Length: 223
Image (cartoon, rainbow, N blue to C red):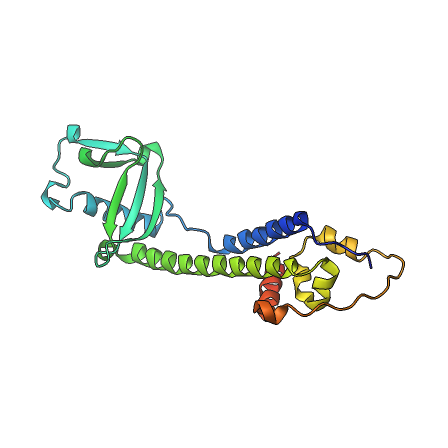
């Protein structure tokens, strides 16, 4: 087994691998979109027009054409009426022949923001919003999980002069180190004189070995 010295380059490459693993895990929880001719789209259209005429519902369908404008892209924001914060947001795009027609006061220079209160969302839109909120919670969990993995793996590697010593003490770490370093370490070389073992850093750094292994195994299952 060849001796692989721990270097800053190796740490940077390991960091990049962990972040790529995290990015792949996050793809399972990508932000959803609202597509034309779906139940969510129909419900969103109704909510958008309700919001557009919220202050004067009687004007809906009664404004002259000169007081309206058309747009093929809307930035829909669902706002909590109780907390006043944005719960979820998405862009809705439609073809030219399906453009939204809205009052001129909503027109902006480059985008059209439509704020819909959560209690104005009904049917399929309400379901979509709740699913997106749950999805975002999962995204934050995965992001935090991989940030913690990165912190622990890089911190642990820094306590060792070589990759060999690090993997000997905590084999789970091998799943996060780029393959070229692992292959180099496993190259056959002439036997070396056994060095004195280093004091374990696993407990000192409070590393959760089971969590590290579980995240790496989950990544392999998705690959």
